[in-house]
Image (tube, rainbow, N blue to C red):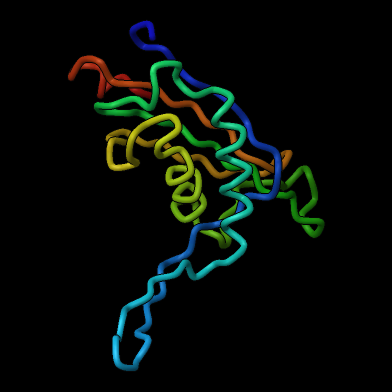
Length: 148
């Protein structure tokens, strides 16, 4: 990997938010807590992201160290908004939940763990549905102010 190498790719499809976790306890002789994702539709979306990301994975394995990332989320244009008045998608789902699905999908493929992401820019726009991902390693502390 060369210094400041950037990985960039797009995934086509309607972005699905990664919801909060739900927890419940299975009672009985051996009670145990079970934690599941609140949105069951997230898994196929994340599988698609992982499949595309794997084609761009670093040759030496997932990156270690601090990571910067820009995620642009494109949502479908609502039919009830005239194109000349098209603004920003300020309705649900929120940008961070949409981004969380992307961030989690790249763990163990592009970087070891999503906790490594120290600089994150998330953009939510209308357009051809999908996400555009740009990710790179921060090799010097001074780079963090110039990441985006």
